[in-house]
Amino acid sequence: NAGVTQTPKFQVLKTGQSMTLQCAQDMNHEYMSWYRQDPGMGLRLIHYSVGAGITDQGEVPNGYNVSRSTTEDFPLRLLSAAPSQTSVYFCASSPGRGENQPQHFGDGTRLSIL
Amino acid sequence: SQKIEQNSEALNIQEGKTATLTCNYTNYSPAYLQWYRQDPGRGPVFLLLIRENEKEKRKERLKVTFDTTLKQSLFHITASQPADSATYLCALDPNQGGKLIFGQGTELSVKP
Image (cartoon, rainbow over all chains, first blue to last red; front, top):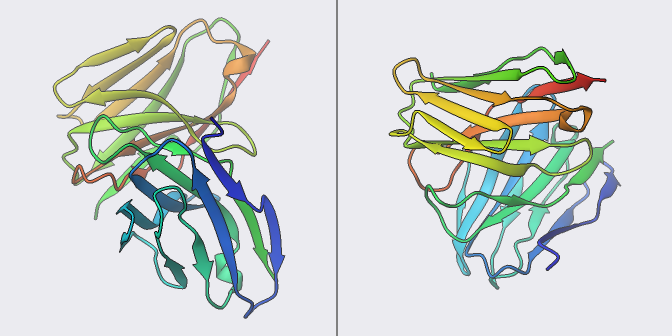
């Protein structure tokens, strides 16, 4: 099993450009989420999904869109990149919600917006 | 306001000693708390989960305590090794809906 796979690993964008960060998991997990990690801020939840066709906002959703057409994939779209979106982005999955569901993380996408 | 805080300064200890990391939270009443390890350039990896009705949880050289009165969790690594050097994150789920809130992490450095 590959676990949670994120692509690309690194990306540089210009302000105003759009792009999609890819996330795929092969564990048949229902719950998937996107976090961003900034120095001194810890991980902050952007969007999450409890199953195919269902998404909801986290703590910092502005400027990002998500969709969940399959159980395996949960892409994150930046509509018009801004320098404030420079960060490391992590995708995570778990079998479900609740106390017995530790999250499995990918190794991140490092995104720089110029 | 609600927040979760960990030691902001890096923790430097000698090999063989016990490392103790702190996680404090305010204005939450979590049913459980999780600890993760993160290595440079990698995603966090789950280590331990402790429930509100558990005072202590152990896994090999790791021990976690959870004091809901003090609103604090302590994470101990006994007989520490240089390979334990990493950033350790605590996380809680205020509404048991899977929306984890993370602390900012504490960087641990174990010197030989």
